[in-house]
Length: 171
Image (tube, rainbow, N blue to C red; front, side):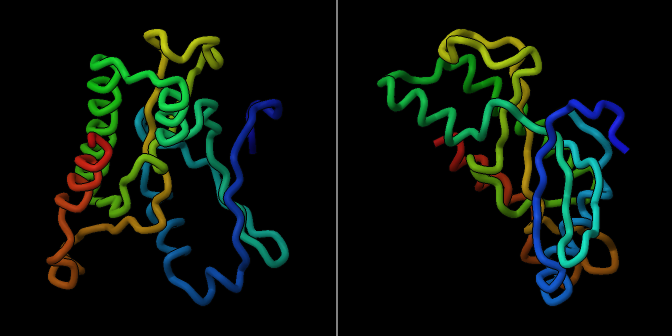
């Protein structure tokens, strides 16, 4: 049930045979269902099973991913302003903090998994200070949930894997 039928969404599609034979797909759906709406996590709407496919519905982020944003500046021989870098990294950190409070580790944090959204529409000039920029973490197919039942099996996984990813994003 979509309250606004004119709202743009993103659909992630995979075949039933994929998620029936590979638990990574079922794990992603489980992780997504655990997440309440948070301003720094892409909003998961719903799952639909249709014939031989499973469809996952997400909010649409009109600014693309952080790699595309970086490439825009690179092609113009421009650099991010330090204030924008600090803002983006702070927003990513808020998203990670939310995940950790919910005993989740993303395990694949990279610039392609950071989405940007401009709720008031794409600005005509991305080089200006965009005060309405939203930064959201996406793609949870490699995420894991740490709980008391599987803690011993996952001792090699901790927040460090995400912090390493954040460090690479900083670079």
